[in-house]
Image (cartoon, one colour):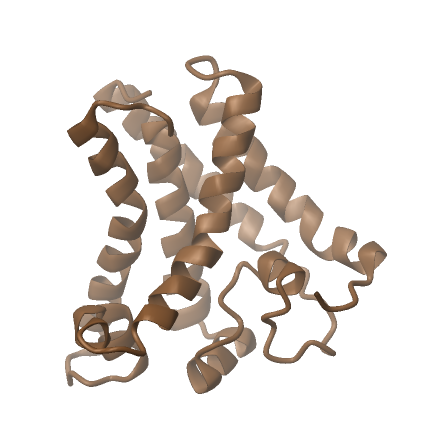
Length: 198
């Protein structure tokens, strides 16, 4: 593990992460206990990092290198398609990486993760990855596309697990991503009401 400046770590990451976790947990309570909602939130937030990291690791081997659109369309640009279609495909892949938990729970009739929390986490990931990183552009994400095996994001996990492309760079205060959390989890709350999700 890299040396972490804990004061700067807390200032840079904890406000945003705390809001994300609080909004996420609010989707699960009262159907789940506070502890369960907290653990679910941590799991789904960490899935943003570990799922992305795993996708790149398995995609170094055939046939996964051609089965993963995130790598061969979004990263390697192996298919020449319009940018809007690439981003739509990427958003769909992002969504399915989370929604697969919902599908598995329905197939096996188990309910460990809140359905609305899964959807809210997917929306948050899409908002940050597609809007901030792909459309508006982000220096960290550009480095991820150049080097592939670093800057998986969220940066809080890159810092904890020493996968920042430039470990000497100051931590990024992504307070603007709080807005994405508010929008993403509000949309999930609306879907929770409309479709009576847990």
